[in-house]
Length: 532
Image 1: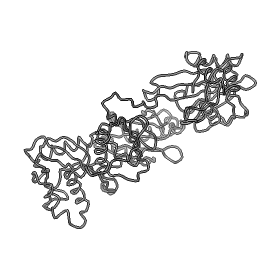
Image 2: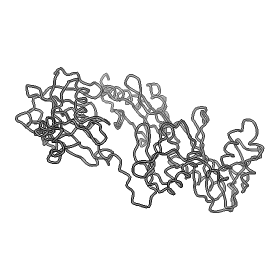
Image 3: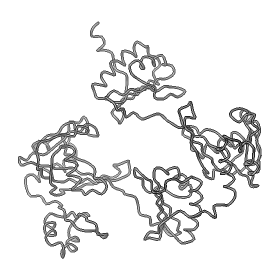
């Protein structure tokens, strides 16, 4: 009996991208508590030995009897839907990096206008407004996978049978701990334009529905009672959207660029409501078009990302985004657009570091595409914004191995299309570096192991020999170790704006340029293949 536990199979799990395991029991017809308990014990031990991190177990309603077993072994609820519950456990030492559950519920209120300037209002059979004799806008909750605009159109149709077209978001607000004293409600007030006008109310939820003058809606006694300030504010927003005040609203603060466009930088703006931005953008676009402006750029910080949807609906598109902002553009001229494209390439480096014994510095990585291949590879990495290729190569070697180096030259480079996010191109520079220290101190977070390896042994690895691009790069490294191989060296110059810039060109020319830069750089630049 003592060895039977070793023969119990593990739970069937799939490794996720973050070093965790996802166990999906939705297709399992049955499993006893005893069987689940034994398999879970064995699985947790194996996963911990394998260095797995977050464990996810998806249990259908039919297997709810197994929940208690998992909870007693340290699992916690992550979330639950009608048909299943998701349990999680973090195996390593804290802190856990398991993502949190959905934290918000999204609601809408629909301000629907007809051609007579009347708005669509309802009274409900139940809920907060029951028996209060209050006429309110149609409201509802956005469903999973449903857009805000589509939800607003759907709710109006369901409650009143009115067909309507989404116009814009007028405002939105948030209410914390509004759902089960924990989740946050975000409520969007949307303007819709009616395309049908005969009301057929939904009997199950709606007591009455009609068209009402906006002023009459705003002036209901309910809106002026203490504690109802939020409802009064929404009512006034609806009224304001009717009165044409946008014509007196100031333009967005923009700066003309060198190409006849306008740059709007909102990075220093503390706050701006959706209503204010919508009105200012409308007026600004009209003014800029009248002035013959061309490309419009709007830089929105993360704190104002709620305004993105408004700009998109007015013809703006994403240009690029960084951690702290998103850049939107719109071409408002009738001429062909000349807005420059976003960055299209990512720059990577591989570092050939040779010591005096013709040994090359190599590493094995903990994660990534080479995990589990047994490949000893060169230190590699991605060049950061504003960083020179040579500096990035030196930095990556230092970070991964603790070895100090001096950049010598670029030996070769290659490109790989649609290799990043299925769209961007990678350009990979193979750089030679000369070590000035030799004691390896590997980076524990990324590097499994690092060592000095005879270069012939590095080149002969089956993984490298069986892949043409790796074999080509390795042969260049081997040739460089045996004989003179002219690559691309650096020449410090200045660009058009006067900033320092490195020119990479044939080493012979680089030596000459570094000595004769003042009078020779222009002509030699045209004669050699180089990169700036």
